[in-house]
Length: 350
Image (cartoon, rainbow, N blue to C red; front, side):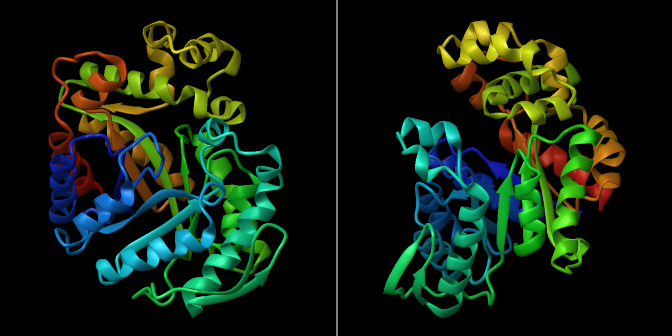
C-alpha cells in the first residue's frame, strides 16, 4: 500500500512548501495537488518545491484536458519531471464540470468524454515520447508541433482520474498506467471501481494488479474523535455538489436527502448548507476520527477491495475556518495531522 497526500493549495506558500518538505521527510509516496482556478497555482508551487524535496513525487490531481490542451499538460509534466529528476506524476481527466460551466465552455466540447480522454492519452503519450507531434483526431489536431520539454522518466507514467464510472474506470484499466478516483468510501463504492478497472485491464490483456489504483479519501485525524468527525462533516458537505448521484448512492447516501444542502451551497448559503448536512452524511462521505478509526476503515474496506494506493486530504483549522467560518476545538494543524497519520497509521500498515 502506497500513501500519498492530496493537497488543496490554499495556505500561504511558505506553509505549503514546509508541508511538501514534511511529506518528503516522512516518506509519503507523492503529493498531488488540485489544479483548478479556485486554488493557488499548482505548477508554480511544485516548481518551488522540487528543490526542497528529494524523494516525494509531485503532480496535478487532476490535469483537465478540456480547459488545457493535452500537449500543454504534457509540456508541464515533462518540465516538472526534469526539475525533480524523474519524480513527476501525470494524472488527467476531463476536469471539474462545475468549473467548465463557470468558464462557459461550449456543450459540444464536453460531449463524448471517453473518446476525448482516449485521444488525449494518445496525444500525451506521443508528445512525451518524441517531443514532437503530427496528429489529426476528432478532438485534437497538430501539425509539426514540438517542444524542448523532455521528461527524465521513460516513459513518464500517465494515469487517468475519474469519479462517476464505470466507463472511465474501464478506460483507465485498458490504456493508462493507473486510475485515481475520489469519493469512494463504502465497500460497495470501492468494489464497483475495482471491478470496472479490472474489466478494462482484462479487455486489453493487462495485469491490473501491476497498475496504480488509488482512492482519495477526505477527512481528518485527531486524538479527539469528535473534533475530527466535525471537520470531516464540513469538508464532506462542501464536496456534495461535485459528487454524481450514482456515487452518492454507492456510498449509502440518498441524493434526494442531500438535495436541499446542495441547493443551499449553489445559492451561496454556506451556513444553511452546513446545517442541512447531518453527521451521518459526514460519516458516509469522509474518514474522520482517531488513528484507530482510520486503520479500521483501511483494513475493513480499502485493502480487501483491491486498492494499492491511498491519497488522504485532511480538513485542518485553516481550511475549516476559510471555507466555513468555523473553529473546531481539538482539531490539529495540517502538519500535525500528517505527522499523526504517519506515526500511527502508516507505520501500522507498512
